[in-house]
Image (tube, rainbow, N blue to C red; front, side):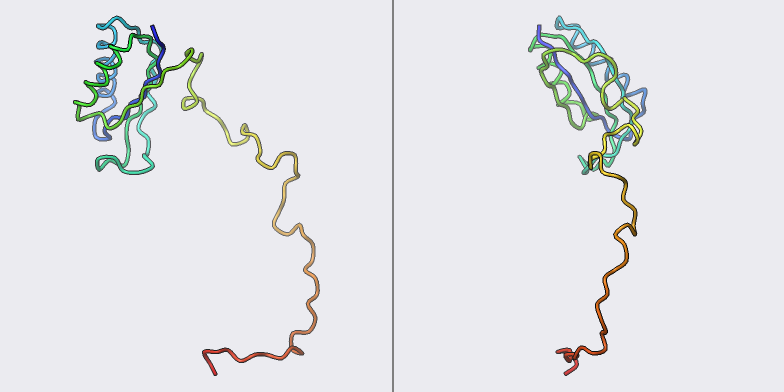
Length: 148
C-alpha cells in the first residue's frame, strides 16, 4: 500500500468538534476501503492568504495515511461533495515523518538561522559621521519649473 500525507481545510464557521467529526468520518472511509490512518494533527483555525469561498480563515487538519489508491479516491470524492471542506491536498510520500509536523513545532525567533551569516549586528548609526558636503549657499540655485 502507498503512503500519503493528506491536508484539508474546513470552513471557519464550524466548531472544532465538527472538524474532529469530519476527520473521523474520512478516517472511517479510509479504513472501510482497506487503509490505515496514522498520525492525525489538528492545526486549528488559521488565516488564509486569500479568501476561499468567502472565508478568510479555515480549520486545518493533517492525516498520515497508508491506503490503496481507491480509498484515497473515495475520500477525495466525499470531500468534493462536502460543503464544509474548502480545499484538500493529498501527496504521496516515501515514508511518514516521525514526531510533530513543521506546523506543530513551536519555534522561537532565536532558533531560526540568521540570513546574514556571521556578520555582526548592525545598528542605525554605525556608518560614522556623514562626510562634509561643503557650503550649500555658494551653489547657484536653479529656479523650479513650476515657479518660473
